[in-house]
Image 1 (spheres, rainbow, N blue to C red):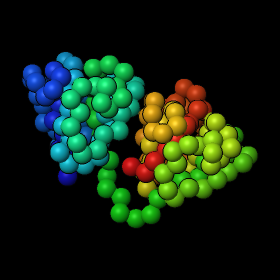
Image 2 (cartoon, rainbow, N blue to C red):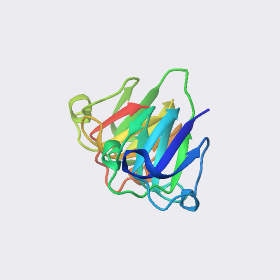
Image 3 (cartoon, rainbow, N blue to C red):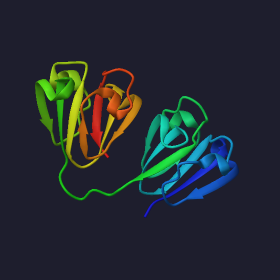
Length: 171
C-alpha cells in the first residue's frame, strides 16, 4: 500500500491532497504541485491526466519543490503506484527496432548505457522481469520513462520522442 501527499506550494505549504492509489485525474484535487511527501511505496507521477506527458519516479522521501524530483514545471495531473516486485529483474535492450541488432541483457541498474552497451540509443527492449525506469541522460538524469513487463518494439512504445537512453534502473 502506498501513500503520497501533494502540496500546492513549496516546502509542504498550501492546500494538500493525500493519495493511496492510482489516480488518472489529480486536477480535481489541486491546481499545481510544488512539493510532495512520499510516505510509502514507489510512484510514477505524470504531467498530464491519463498518465501522459513528462514522467517522474519518486520513492519514499520528501521533495520540497519540483526541482527535487527533476520536474520541468509544477504540473502533476496523474499518478501510478508501482507494484512491489520481490523477484529478479531482467531487461533486454536492442540496437534497432523490432528486437534487431546488437542486444544485451541486464539484471542490475546501469548508470551509463554507452559504457555497457556501446551505443547511445536504445530502439527496442523487452522487460522480462520486474519494472524499470529509463532516463534520457547518464547517472539517472533527464526525462524518465516507466517500463512494465512486456515488449517495446520501438522507443515510442515507452513514450519517448527519441531513442536516447543514458541510464536505467530497477523500480
